[in-house]
Image 1: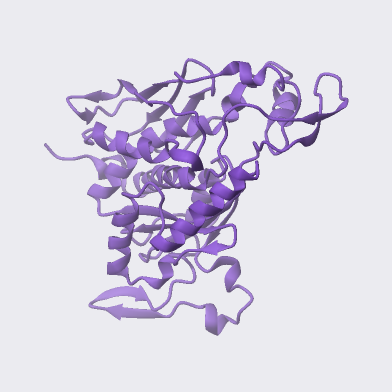
Image 2 (image 1 turned 30 degrees about the vertical axis):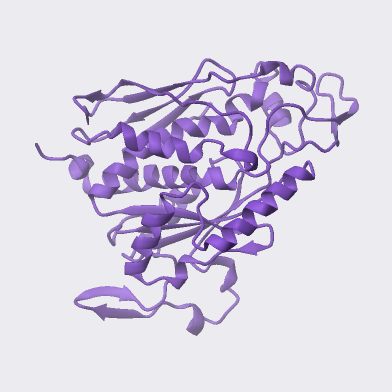
Length: 370
């Protein structure tokens, strides 16, 4: 079972949705990184359910740092974070436990683990595990911020409602926009658009259904020259970890599918000298050329599917008998996960960028001097 990502910084997740704990181990962190526990709590709060647009299962996420931190700084040894599950209702899954839920991993998990898997709440496949990723990612985000690197994600599209794009901002304004959205529970650039999106989520919930959309992420401040030409390209590393986030079904960089059918004269990013620094006039390539960062903002869009757990009756199959069966899901579920997934995307991007920078410049690149 492969649950570890990264080379210089290795991130391992463990636990199940209804088990006693979930957790993360960060192995390879530089010593001397400040660990701000309030910042970790802030990031966990952004992932936590909020109101009628989210699931009714709300966990306190009172985490424990079990190792790897001494006097508020990383020691350089494996850092382990444990988060208890305290608000489980496993009985909700007794009735439907062996009926495959459409859109979930119930059938594929059975194929791989031969029925020994914990299916309650999705078990190890549950989005609940992302809380541990967010806790670990907060440490990487803090370390990157000290190096002038910031990451922010907003809901670019939900249903047929579209927010402003990061492409509409200058580099200076983009930094301000990222700072502002990182404080928002419902992360949008335009408040009126955000209200329409929330209404669409509430309508989906009223219809016993769910809704998906597209997240847009910007990574600013990453230096030019990070990444490899082929199998460890910056796009490859980021795509790898982004596709590990439950519900992500598509990843594109820069202009992506929007402009690739244009001519090269329209798509190419012209290089310019701006106060002695190399920049590009446009950013259709999303800050990456030949798999290597060029110093411009890395921009990414992620397609987030509608939550598969819906209250409408669905057609399925009983995995024990292979008989066709109708399924009415019980329990507590999100009518949309996109607004909660945004901080998960920030977190995995931070872990990937940290890993790439540590490979490029060495682990001590992040060590804070005494």
